[in-house]
Structures are given as C-alpha cells and as structure tokens.
Length: 246
Image (cartoon, rainbow, N blue to C red; front, side):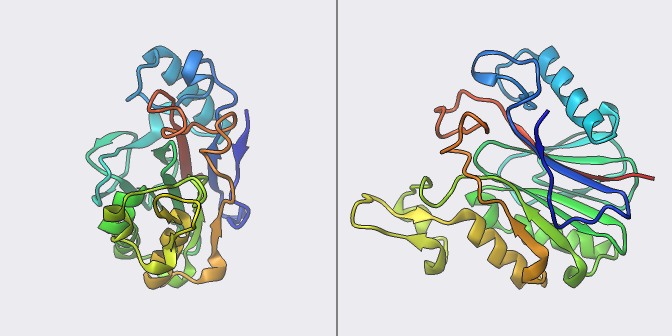
C-alpha cells in the first residue's frame, strides 16, 4: 500500500498521519483499487475492506475511523468516537486512538496537529469550503480545545493544481487576485487552491514554516490519485487521515 506521509509531522508523540493513493485495495474498474468512498457506486463491501486496510496500515481499527460526511460546507465536529458524521467538512479531537478521515478526489484534505497539546484536526477544502471558512472554523475548534495556532503543524494533501483548475469568472471572483492566474492561451481563469488554503491558514495564526503543501496534482496524475474532474465524476475517493496513539 502506498501512503504519502507528511514529512513535517513529528513521531515522538505518536501522531500518525497519511494521505492515501489509488494503490493497495480490492476495488475494480474506475474505482481501482483503494477506493475509500462509500458515496461512490463501488461495491460497499470492497470499500469497507479498503478502509480496514488503510486504518490498519496506520495502526488503527476500522471501527475507530471518524469520517466526515462532507457537503462542501464549513461545519466542524468535535469527535470522541468512530463513525460517520454527516454534514460536517471538518473534524477535531483531543482523544487518543481515533482516526480522523477526510475524503477527497481533487479537493484538498488538510491535516493539522498541535503536538504539544495533543489535539488533531482535519478538514475538506475544495474551493467552496476554502472561501466559505472551513479552514478558519477548523483552527477555531482546535483552539477551543486548547491548541495554539502558532504551534500547529499542517499538511495540505494532493489536490488539483493551478495548471488544471480552470474555473468560471464567478468562482475566480471569490478568490484574491493573488490566487487567480490568467494566460493568453487559457480561455478561462485558473485558481491556485493549495496556495489559497495556505494563505488562509497563515491568517488564522499558523506559522508558514509549519505548513507543508503537496506538489502533486490529482488531475495530471490520475493513475496515482482519484480525480473527479479527470474521470468526469466516475471515480473513487482517497482520504487524508490523522490520529493519536496511546
């Protein structure tokens, strides 16, 4: 199984985190092979087997996976047990042996941890969530548990790159000019999603050197990652996962 590990997260406090790829599961067809999304048309039994494999790879039980039931919104849930939390795009916890899980297939899964206070967070940041405040709300909820934003380490997972993220003018207008790119050969503007996420986290008080961004593009590397846009909606889901072990 191929998982991408954040390089800026320490291990002495037993904070375990990873972003999954397509490799290492039992699904077939457009969902091959490590599809972790039960919201897809994949066989549910295969998805559950894939989830069990991914959780065990990080040393957690599948029953302890806390999965955000995402709606491209900005609601964040404090969790202390596994399960599906419908309607939430962010999860935070100060409990051990809970694996926070965020699904993605072009949007970014964002993982956060204050190792000193032992508080973890995770959120789903597509363009709607990014401009809608999911990042700010996740940091706020972590802070309410005792986290210090200046101590938070963050990893922004693989997502669609600016070269591939063409949007309409109505979407571009919701981003700072800093994150909107235009070229003569592009008929429409493009948005730098990971750059916009990073800047919003810095406004929340995170230190730039504590934020790690993946340089991988889900759209351009559809053989490695699931991409909703590249596969025209018929594809699986990856996950960003983070949790604390005892």
